[in-house]
Amino acid sequence: MEELASGKGVFRMPDPDGHREYIRTHKSREMKSKVMTEKEAIEKFVSDGDYLGYDLNISKRGPTALFREVVRQRKKNLWLAVRFSGLDPALLIAGGCVSRIDIGWFMHGGTASRAIEQGIVKTTEWSNSAVVYRQLAGAMGLPFLPMRYLGGTDVFENSGAKLVKDPFTGQEIVLVPALNLDVALVHVYQCDEYGNARIFGAGLSPVETATCAKKLILSTEEIISNEEIRRNPQITTIPYYMVDAVVHLPFGCYPGAMPGLYGGDREHTMELMLADRMDKMDEYLQKWVYSVESHADMLEKRVGAKKLVDLMKVETIKEGYHA
Amino acid sequence: MSSELNFTQTEFVVCTTANLIEENQAYWVAIGGPPLMAMLLARRTHAPKVFYVVEDGTVSPQPPTYVPFISGASGAAGYRALAWKDMNTMGFHCALGYYDYGVLDCLQVDMYGNINSSIIGGTYERPGRRFGGPGGANEIASMCWHTILMAEIEKRKYPKRVEFISSPGYLDGSPRARERAGLPANTGPYRVVSDKALFGFDEEMHRMKLLALAPWATVDEVLSNMGFEPLIAKPLGTMALPTDEQLTLLRSEIDPGGLVIAQGKWITYKSES
Image (cartoon, rainbow over all chains, first blue to last red; front, side, top):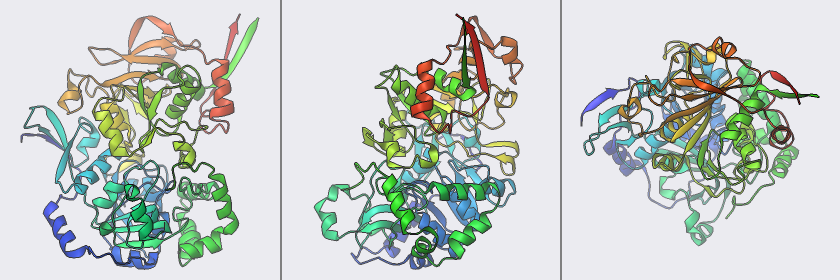
């Protein structure tokens, strides 16, 4: 295949056989309970230097309680796959956890922008879809996929994409390398103790994100029985054998929203946005992460039952978000 | 008798963009801000059934009101959708040619309709100012048949060449530049809506072309606030004023908190009638 141009961005070389070997030797097919605390899950399955991805963001259905545990455990040198994000990169960067990010989109003008401008965090440019498309290639066990965007731009120049002549048609086409994450964090509505999980609502890329990862940690609003899963198998989004840990974390996206269950906490979101802009993330993390032991401890000491009930009340639209 | 109409720059841009939206066409709309507001305004006026998708995979919802990005998260944003899919599915449908128009708000747009939303100043590795990145705009600007861009007239927003192309316009403007870069044929920027002027693109040269002026703006005023000289259509058209209905809908239903529409300077337009 004739190579016409190549981006100079840093990416991890795809290794489909290496990934298969990992799956063969590390992933149990046994139906066993994987329920554990967020402390255990992050200790066991997130290592310094991991390539970490997640679905959605800090505003909506993101695994925010798991992010806070990553920060609490002071993980280092993570490589984040960031697309369609909000202030989630800011949270992890402020915690000193991140050395490199793939950029689809992030909320700029605060912590993340400063860290990139100062050279503390390195970047590779992609786009929202390009990152999830690379995860799709990884989820298919392929080394790359062709696509019809990115080409011609400075994004292409600063990505790991290539422009080639399609060996079938002879036309120019962009190829992007597959992305297989070391670890994915996905917040779900319901799952059983083995990890058979349900996600409702418009996706982003829960399936690609979960499937392309070596290690997968689920946080869930609710643990349901395996019997209940078997009565409605059509709506199982992620099957158990991909899942390494199940963490029961009601309000696990707080301060973000879980559509159909609870709305986002605007007051908290404003506090976070201001901390991000004003370079006061240390104070924010002290209050919401370091000074509490766990998600449950944070909800009890910093949020309170009244606020949680209020957040459930404002989420009046529930159609489609339950089995 | 003279009458006076007051509106913000953003309201004018949103109303003008809404006027471009047609029934029986499919739109891929950036998920928050002015593009989504323009779509919701068109839905409430001349194009009640128009189809749109947003990047997260929400297919043609009927949200009860405008949902700003930070709470765009709630169930309201996806209310009464036709389908809940995902980002890759939106990309596949766009690659197949189902989506006619992309609607995007721009930080910077150049004479060939290329968009920068990544960096200003410095190098890629050590940018002077780092912005959010291409987001979904790269795929929207690459694969929709036409792209409608929104950007207020300011010298820094209309440079001759953007210093970083985050999302493609006609690239260097040369024939087949997009196809040679692997993008689908016969696609590209279609309109640029600003607070003073409406632009299109010359079909041969792919350069931005001034099509119409706001009733209060002059050619000199527009050109002196741009970093390049666009082609100029003859005759030049005049952009429609926002209607009372449009402004009332924006202020009372679509964005009553003024989170988006209150942005930008106020414009007062006096007319004799």
